[in-house]
Image (tube, rainbow, N blue to C red):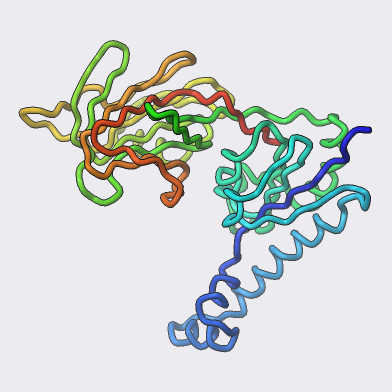
Length: 296
């Protein structure tokens, strides 16, 4: 007998919940905000709107299906199963947070606050999210595969990301490394490198392109192509300003060798989940075999 689907609803704490965690009680959180000319009422109303959307999703799951509710902080400890249907309720970044823990499970992004969130990845109202559960489970909906980026260290450690990888120094110090790409070898001192997917091309990568006033055709979300940009490369007697941007195609990789005591690699802005990229370590950045399967 086939295993029944399991719906895994993923959320993160609302600002209201974070205020309560910091100040212990509602009255103390309210006092903190009122001292700054703000009110907790609006924050609490948004909290109830988000939690109402979550409750609505949970209530419409068929009774014989399995279910789990997972917070963002628990993702690295949660065991996803092949037949899971993932429902992300929150901001676009939450989809990126969960994507690297998946192995092809369909993801339904639900936007509980359309007036607050862009909804590029959480592109369904909660009413639509509810209606999609059964068709997705029956295979009547074909998810859209989104390209991801992967960094692989010479000891076999890997890190995947949906939007981009950042390679650099954990503080504001210069990132020092050697780069190899398409037969060109350079040494850089910079503010680090980002390697962006098409999904991430609307964010950090786009800002860099606009700042440089460059007519660059960034990859699309489903395209098997990555874009890399070196941030603020510094010219000196031993460091170059060549090879500061480019595109990584399938079967290609950008090779980097650290010349830093405290280098790091992290993805999608999650600095606490990182690979150490200290002196002498070698990193290959390429298109990941893994894909996010987004229900568009």
